[in-house]
Length: 227
Image (cartoon, rainbow, N blue to C red; front, side, top):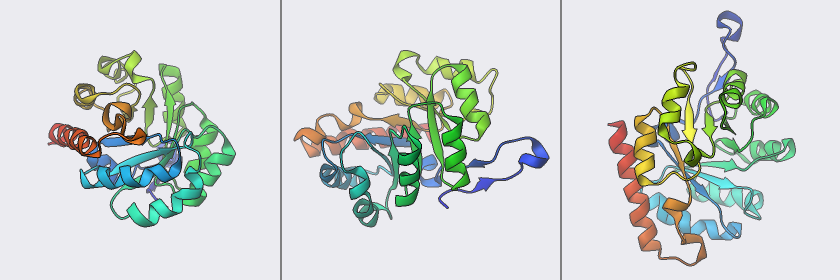
């Protein structure tokens, strides 16, 4: 079990919920890695871990992610939480649980997915944008909700959501750059999910030294906001 399930539903009316990995919560930053092939993860993860990244979401849009995951877990699992994202069906969700994902991310709202992951003791972060979608996932027991695409709304949206949903644990994703990361965290996000603005051209032959600098800048901003 990768998170601690809270089981007070019968007494409090709260759903069962599995906490996000503490290392991910402490870092306040999830890097979303989309590569052309799974073998390309290794060199990029080397740099990310060296720069202080402690949570990476590996996406199923990258061919071979499941097959390569055990090797990545053996090599990097002691230093970084490795989640699996872009999960859109129950078969892939079951496989992500089976291979040992530290957490699961889906771009859609599915209370069935939440139940499946929670029953297995694995944290899950379902996506949504409207209050109805986000509340449906949260009330079903999601570990956090993914505000997606975050670039279409902005940090003030989370402040508005906190009115009716003061306990909502949110992770914005989609179009979050360095300044946006700081703004979303100040608005109350538990973490930010960042892809292109941090990774840039790293998966297409880009300068890995420049990747290290970008990653270190995001780590610094997220740590500063949590201080």
